[in-house]
Length: 267
Image 1 (cartoon, rainbow, N blue to C red):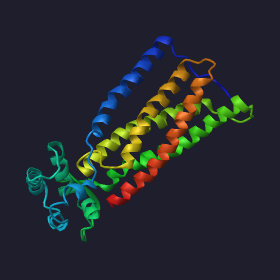
Image 2 (cartoon, one colour; image 1 turned 120 degrees about the vertical axis):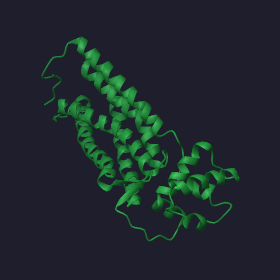
Image 3 (cartoon, helix red, strand yellow; image 1 turned 180 degrees about the horizontal axis):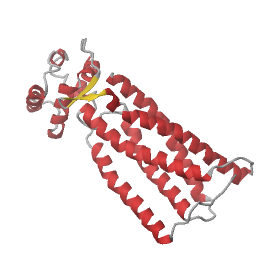
Image 4 (cartoon, helix red, strand yellow; image 1 turned 30 degrees about the horizontal axis):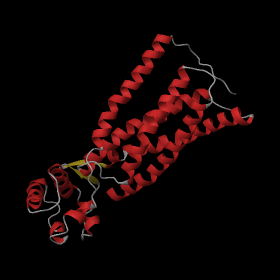
C-alpha cells in the first residue's frame, strides 16, 4: 500500500544537521575521487609513445625486470625524445615493471606467465581483494533494479491510478544504500585502479562512465533525501529524480559490462 509516513519523528534541527552532514561527507569524499582519476594515461599509449623508435620486442624481452630497471629506462627514453611528460614517467615505469600481462596483451608479446595474483608496486594483491570491488558493485546493481521498480510503481499510482504496491520506506532506505554504494565504490575503484595498474585513468570506458555517474549520484541521493525530509506535493522534482536514477541504473549496467572485461583481462 502507498504510504508516506515514517515510523519515527525527527526534530527539525536534527534533520537540518543530518542533511548538512550528508552533504559535507559527499563533498569531502569527492576530492579523493577527483584525485584518483586525475592522471590520464591509457595502456594503449605504449604503442603510440614507445613503439616509435624501436620495435615492441625491446620492451617485451625486458618485462619483469622491475622499477629499478624501468624507471631510469623511461627517463632515458623521455630525454631521447619520447613523448612522455615528467608526470607520466613514474606511471609508465610502474606499468612496464608491474603489469606484465597487460603490456604483453597490448604489444602482442609472447608470454607463458601464469599468476594467481595481480602485481602492483612490486607487491602482490590477493585475487579475493581485487574482486571485492566488482562483487559489491554488482550486488548494488541488482538491488537498484528493485528500487527502480518501486519508483516505477510510484509513477503508475500517481499518473495512471494503477492499483499496485509501492514500498515507500524500502524505496528510500535501499535507494540510499545503492547510491552510497555507488559513490563510495567509485572511490574504492579509483584506489584499486591505482594499486593494480600503478596509475589512474587507465580503465578506459569504465572510468569515463564513472565520471558521468558521479554528478548523477549526487543529484539522485540529494534529491531523494530532500523529498524524504521535506515532504510536500511535488510534480517536477520527482520526475527529474526518477529519470536521473533510471539513467544511473542504465549506466551501472554498462559499468558491469566494462568492469567484467577489465577483470577478465587481469586473470
